[in-house]
Image (cartoon, rainbow over all chains, first blue to last red; front, top):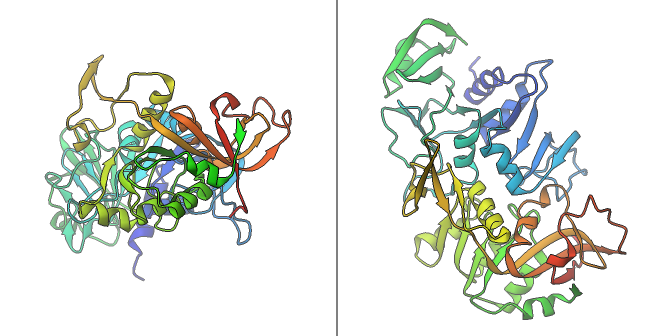
Length: 216
Length: 218
């Protein structure tokens, strides 16, 4: 049975979450990570519009117009949740209190730089909280498909405007798990469904293949 | 604090004013005041807000009706009209990282001359800004923001004008209440003084100039 790439990515990212972590999931693919938290692991989800302790979407009829996520979708507040203003929210993010941020990506390069907020002349949504998240979180995980329309997204050098000059900590795609290091991009894992040759072919950046290459 | 009507509130706002508008994608935005501005066609506005929401919601309605000359926001992705006007050269859009925007508003309200943030260093955001190195790390000097009016949404206020916000509708509202010459608040409920406990009041009455009571809460 074919594997859904987004599900594959979300499942692998979820394994990075540890007990007690404060976690911010970006809109879109990263949101799926919440569905695959390992059993017995409890984390706190932050949403940058002002909550720690965000819970899943409410049942129909129980929506609260003043309780939403950063994409304006209805959420719930778990027991023990706290809400706060935007300055406090970004003090958590920028101040190094956020353990993990999981963000989507348009491009990542050999230096571990992420570009994910605009395509000049085409798509200019604005950076929202992405620049603060990448600059300030303790760990930055990029969760994205390996290619876009067959073209590599992991490049020698990003061609799109960068989100931050901070090196991201981990790149998870449906084909590979890659760790940016001082020496370059270390390929640590490849998907069960792929081969090393295919991963190398679909990656423009130079990859250092780990001596202990695992499957996921 | 004085309780006034929507019409009286909007009488205060002249074309060309700078407005801070609370809300995050419309959540926590004083929609009644926005609707009245649209109805009156008060134009040439500079709007400072988290985002331009949606074409039919929040600040998005001001953009859609071409009432803004400039917006200072972190995100315009949910409002295609903002992007269209920007590309057509009809609207000046200053994109600011969300955490930087919050701190610039806070600085404006707190009497600070600016803030230093690592966010944006080495990106297009640093263009034209002073870079200051402290303990070996680079920071951007980001300047304070202030406005003629802050348009705030609160859950309730008491007879004095003390404000309580609700859940994630809080967002930029309490920050903006400090950073404008005139603060106009749309509330869902006005309760007797003493009902709100000191701990739950997030904006004190002394900051609030006018209160408008929401008519029918969506």
